[in-house]
Length: 485
Ligand SMILES: O=C1CCCN[C@@H]1CCCn1cnc2ccccc2c1=O
Image (cartoon, rainbow, N blue to C red):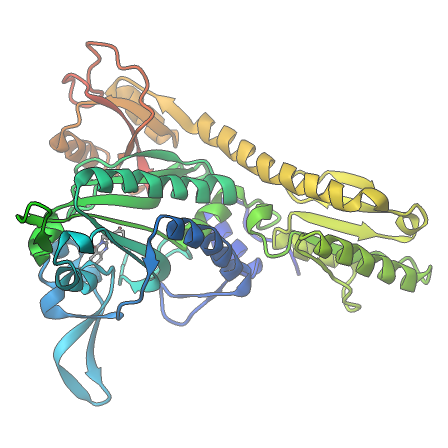
């Protein structure tokens, strides 16, 4: 029958796998680490794309499409940084029965695919800035525990790759894109995130610096990187000889950025808002915002009830609300309530004989379970208000829960205690790489080592003389630490 067998607070991993399947977002596939995205989750991806794509177009970024295959010569060009990732690269070695002379890699990311052509296309200062993005899939043959949306061997993302004449232009764009990522999480997925800078150890090794939006999953006490926006400096320009004649006639290298968000966004939303009845969808990203269900009573005017349902759906759809009716005659209303609660539809409208007689409908909120009677005359206005209220409430509740997980500490003992209490730890740090490596080593355990999540742009006061929680050296900055995905 319906209903989840696992509880979110008791078996989070099993609960999550069950809820994405029962909510009809995911179908498991016969290749480990690969998942089928069903319409219920694909619609979310499309809604986020419908927000992000016009926004980057306003920034004069153009979409393109590069091949999924990378030649090994080009892929291995990034010697230093690729070595860390090499085990994750998937290779095509045969076509039919015959071996390929040179194996071909499937893109795990597209720097090495795109940048030889950036070198070819960028000759003079008039060719700058070059700003391209592509919506595509990437493949990373990871071995650590695969999780739908969160860690899969193939995923969908957008990857932006831009080149500028000056560092200032690059720095500015890094933060403009990061703000779009914050909006994706906070305004669409109703998930609070922290904007910050990655440490030298956690940043993209091929770049100059990495900024990110960091989310937190209270149930597991783990941070999760929501999206990244890197400034690559001139590292890739040097590697791929992306230089040009500047306005003074000198040879100059370009300054580059790269930035991405992926289908991981959907998994974070499920983890944060889902409950023991199933998915809880923020109205802005739910393909069905209101489900209208007829509640006939014996043979009391069933046709009248069905007509009222259609009229209700039509009025809402005309007002731009994504409403549908569930008039299936082979399921009881109760069964339908459970099914649509499992899919996380924000609002349910019930119409029974009493509602018909009183010219009203009964709305039920998925987030709080509250029941609200609405006169037909006020229907559209009240439903719009309810949907806005649900969107805001989901964010407020998630932010309150996340804030309760934040713990400020100053000593190693307090750090360990907070870590064991599944906290998102804010600590003064000397910002030395070896110290972060040492913290990782000292906290290694079956539930994973602690690492820096980011150093928030919004820095609390750091009084003179404050020392690093891990090394005792003078603290240089506040940083969030925790276990992470
Ligand atoms: O984040 C982004 C934003 C979008 C463009 N790429 C950058 C950096 C990707 C880092 N990365 C991540 N996994 C990899 C896996 C295999 C080979 C290379 C890589 C690799 O370079």
